[in-house]
Amino acid sequence: MPLLDKLWPTRVRLSRARLLLWARYSASSVVATAVSQVAFALCYWFGSPALVATLVAWIAGAVPNYVLNRRWTWGRSGQKLPYTIIVIGSAVTAALVTSLTDHLVQPLESHAWKTILVSGSYLATYAVLFIVKFWLFDRLVFAKPSPAASGDAAEARTPATT
Image: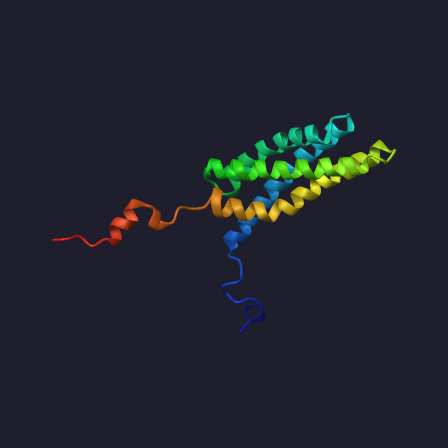
């Protein structure tokens, strides 16, 4: 028995397809995060309140995130309402965290340090939400319909009466 089989039972190991899905989701998230992080840091550096910087950054990152996830990661259109709830919930969480961090760093004199710390809190929020969002997107937004959900599958299992 190979060592991998002893360490990771078959049911625990990820399939190649799941690993590819995870890699694509990660790459999509890196692109969206880079875009939104730059937008946040620039807005905050030039004097926007943390809440405004968060909203601008969220919009800047949400567009490439949705397009990449829909077309490249999962390869299909997802449920729009759950997607909207998840990303707005993420934005609200980031707005709360960055606003709190902004409040806490006000005694600092250095605007550069304030920008670094508040931008860091924005990035940290999305880092924490990264796995949660993957699970929610995979299970709710872009989930493949089960065979039982389609009418054809139900008809195929229902015996015909004579």
